[in-house]
Structure formats: structure tokens, C-alpha cells
Length: 127
Image 1 (tube, rainbow, N blue to C red):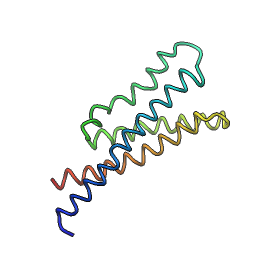
Image 2 (cartoon, rainbow, N blue to C red):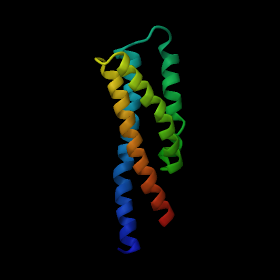
Image 3 (cartoon, one colour):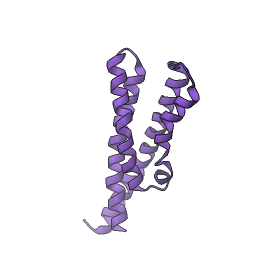
Image 4 (cartoon, rainbow, N blue to C red):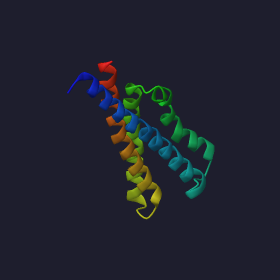
């Protein structure tokens, strides 16, 4: 397989997985917002709780928008906390959909982000 064909394949893979990464990233943020503001409003300041939930997720956003694989790697580290939070929520209230959504979306986003890191790094190395 020629180098040009490999690059074209890698470009197609990245073009598929990058929008999926960003879509799942937005879905996780919306899930957290929906749970805090509508589904299960906590006692106290919703704004403070929203900030605590979303600020860690926004840290790698600038790099993600630039398609930086290092930012996606940091996102994977951050997602571990959201996955753990979702699993703990499921164990406390298995009938509540929020824990399932948080754990599922964070797991999917982790997997898709790893694919993005791998393929984008290879594409950058080949260029």
C-alpha cells in the first residue's frame, strides 16, 4: 500500500471520528446540565455545582477544536472522574437514567477519543 493511500485512509478515519468525539463531548456536557438543572436539581447553588461539573471538561476544549491529540489525551484522563461518578450514581440509584447516561457517554467518549488520538497522531507524523 502506497504512502498516499495510507494517508488518505487515515484522513478518512480522522474525518469520521473527530465529529463523533465532539458530538459525544457535547452530549456529556448536556447530560450533566440536564441532570443538574432539570432532572435532579440538587439543594444549594445550581450554578456552583454546574461550574464544578463543567469547568474540568472545558479545559481541553481549545486544543480539541484545533484537533490536538494531546488535548484529547487529557480529556481521556478527565473522563475517568465522570465515569466513576456515573458508576457511583448507578450503584446508589440503579433506576435513575442519569448515572447510566453519564457512565455510558463517558465510556464511549473515552474510546472514541483514543481512536482520534491514535489516528490523528499517525496522520501528523506522516505529514
